[in-house]
Length: 124
Image 1 (cartoon, rainbow, N blue to C red):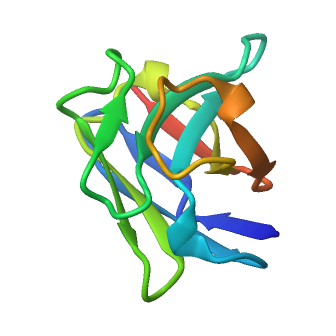
Image 2: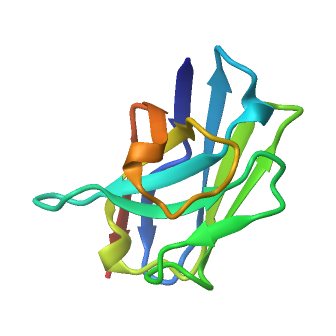
């Protein structure tokens, strides 16, 4: 399984970015997908998850109301729309493919494949 994340970059506080993650290697629509992030000196943390069909989503409290996860099963791609970005959102963002089809509680143990990460930097 390969996950290729893209869309990161440098943006000012209050701005927006859209991350994409293209998946290949197994039936995309059988698996929930998630986004995680890791800031320098911090542990990787859950950001958002989406179930196999896109009908159920789950967000970390820190991004709720600002970020939106979505997926296009025809394109084998999951997205993360990030609005109202804050400097504390600065991190490397990783997409991940879950072992299961449901959203779950954001635990990294539910995910068995990870992308290479894309850097998001929010300047103040």
